[in-house]
Length: 222
Length: 222
DNA sequence: AGGATACAAACAGACCGTTGGTTTGTTTGC
DNA sequence: GCAAACAAACCAACGGTCTGTTTGTATCCT
View 1 (spheres, rainbow over the protein chains, first blue to last red):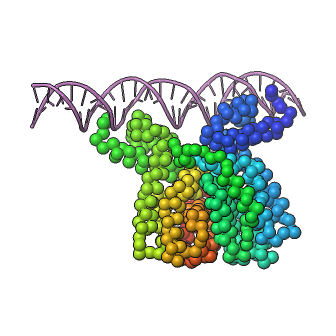
View 2 (cartoon, each protein chain N blue to C red; view 1 turned 90 degrees about the horizontal axis):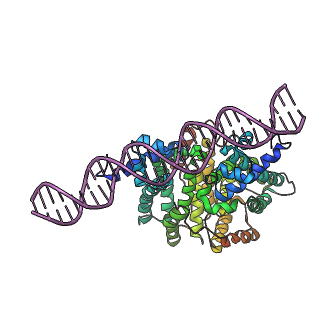
View 3 (cartoon, each protein chain N blue to C red; view 1 turned 30 degrees about the vertical axis):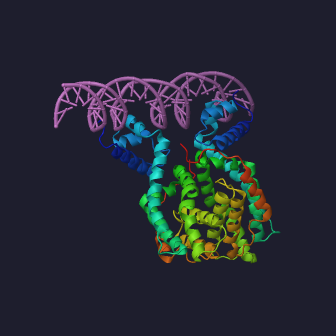
């Protein structure tokens, strides 16, 4: 097939397949050939739409970011909620978003997904914090529900802990350990006026991670 | 040269070279050929001592871990300090260790060093927290200088924030931003009885990061 | 005690399959 | 007719293997 009438459909197919494979097997262990096989496309097709394998990866990440960003923007711009209420809502939302993206699937296999972790860190600093979290915290300062002189730094700490510690659970943990993490997480931010950042409902949802099947080999196995 | 009398010297040469190259250029961008060229060894030599390129990487990480572990163990077992005092000392120590390992050099190029970041995360959960931080916090609980019902979780939060946010500075920041991060970091742990976790001296040392030359291209550039 | 011998450690370097990436060619919608 | 949308042959470089060579050292014989 040449001169497809709907090339964006081909792009979507490539991204869908790549996203699934990257999440399932990790970036390194997914070869271009794998993507070719599963899409049924040729190398020419792929390299017509993307500059490199890394470019596919970045496009996949960008698409995930956009999906999540849309939901976060809606929350940020909701003017029926206080800043604090929005932060609480984000805990629930990010749990949900993560399950959608199935990124929690890959987290147990951290070493195969180093690239995702690095990208997440980048997007936290370049996107999530400045575009969503800092504005929300500034609103919280304005409406009196949050107290801090450093909204940006507070946003960074909160998102980092949320996204690389609490949710997803990077390291296997028992229900008690997960509960303990949530308790500590909540206490950490209490002095900023932020009470009960993670509520009981979210804690219960997070506890479900404890039952997830885990790889038997240690993360740093060769 | 065959049947070297001091093979461990060869291993050291490989590890030294690999560590430098991995830190300078990142794991992916360092080829085996690079290591061969810089050590003057042959492929046979490398694969005699190591099973794979990844094996070299893990050995490099292990060696760094051992270097740092020795210093951390000395601190942990020092019985002239309270738990809280040890935590403060760790802030200073980790700054120092990181500069030794030159890992701060690579952090601005996060995407080229995704593997290091992932390994650091693994070692935090598998090594730093259980072996060093949790015992210290437990001591702090016993001697009354730290208050928490969840020593493990508190240790995790502290080390994560310390190692992927405060030090090294993953994201370029101005002196004011770095200072703000330290202020927030300190406030976060105050309710656990931990006052002034990072003192003024360390803050000043961290501020020096602001003057570090940074890559001109954005981190997620292709 | 010391020289010959056996053996495996410590390499060297040719070789291999796979990989990401390029180029050239072909079809086809507009 | 022209370029977008592919197909597929081709390429260099990569990680990894295999075979071959040198040589330190333990063992044995005298």
